[in-house]
Length: 375
Image 1 (cartoon, helix red, strand yellow):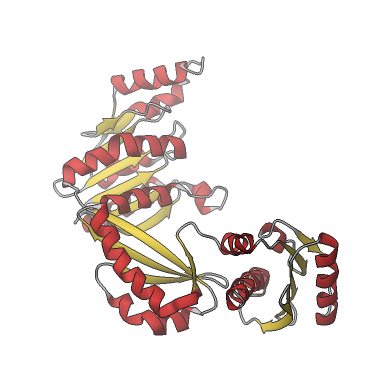
Image 2: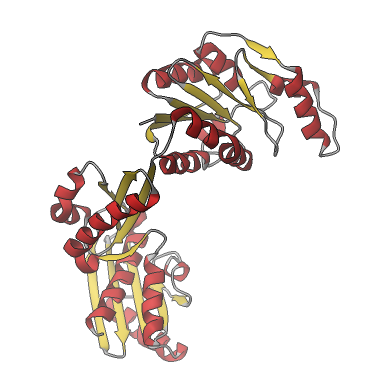
């Protein structure tokens, strides 16, 4: 099975000036091809450091994909770095230059002299046309490995990846397997408790099972590799059914499902409406519910009364009140439904900055499970 690493190039990424979305897109594409991704790394605009990373990667992997550093400026070092990694020179190619000129002319401009750099590639490179931008991509083949250098602009990278690179990889490595993933979202059980219940499944070789803890939510990832999508999904379904049987009501959704969406759908099925009342959350509850009211800091009794008032004024069936107290690391919750009123206090042991998100997730899950108890 082919293996790969991704090297993202750009000092602006290291400095946090832009968010790297290319790595995720490439990783998902490789996953669907059945390629095992071993590592991703970000390197600044330094040709020597990039070359070192490439040399290390090609010793371990069949496929090394770089993204970024193919522009026309002096701080776009990928061409030189790849050449150094393979101990070859670079060369100017007139055909590539004509493609760059043609691409720039589409914008009604003439190329500047520094843009000639985009027509320079390592000796022996397979040039890959960029029909949606000015920076050509290229491929360098060795006896064992292949280095693929793609532009850093996301829409250019994605177009070249899907139109040229994926078909190339399928031919070169006879890629006939796929990897599919199902993410089960859980709430109400911590990561440790979930691990106790499904730990033996986490030792499986195919599908593989892993946990990812978020703030108040834990994801169970099930990934299967097979010769086709149908078989991969069959393998996933067998394990998914077992996970659901063991975790029960803690599983609230899968893949694109979100906790607030699941809760709102459950309310809609009952014909109920909801209003939120929040304090100390910075408006976070209002981003998760269609109707929420922010109020000044309240005591537990004050939160209950504010929730009663908000429910009456809004004319809703349900009121969900959440108050976070960062200094005390506690949160108060109030839930009023046609079945009655109840309150709940929770103590938080994590980073203070995550208290609000944790409290909102727990409150939404409390509403979800409360509706199930009275259905």
